[in-house]
Length: 216
Image (cartoon, rainbow, N blue to C red; front, side, top):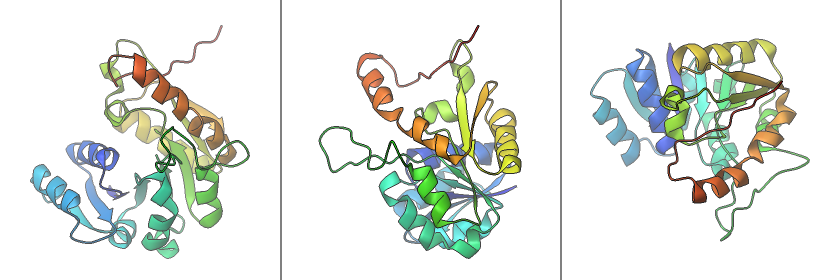
């Protein structure tokens, strides 16, 4: 499958490399076509399946798009990608609305709104599914590295899009326990887990940890 990835940071590179290893064609998009991180990533993969260019190029290329940009830049990046290139496509949103201008961790949007909802409102013809934003990038593609099963969450308005994304999580990335939280408004809850994640990171000796939901 042809996959577009918006963002050249660790999340985009980790997911992109995993998908290339699985045999998919992956186009990494950045603001500038000659982004050094994207070039280095494609060179590291040493194959014709790893491509790079602009946000617009990646969105036009991908049958499915991953938004792996910083939350503060996501809407701008998606507008650069172009609504026409995102129309009717599944957009897997892994971003979080963290305000990095503050010394303490602050979410730029929470409670009555979420970044996932803002993206869906800005691109009503795109099928937005929020997932993978509650963990470090190494966990996103290697959930089996933990000794027990943990959970990944999905949120989105389009049932068929969520079904497809759940299949990607299970079959491509190895997630055995996927919880469908409901429509895109449930992005609020998973985005507000970030303060807890950062608090845990201060006291847990490794960033390879995740949440497990247990019910009776």
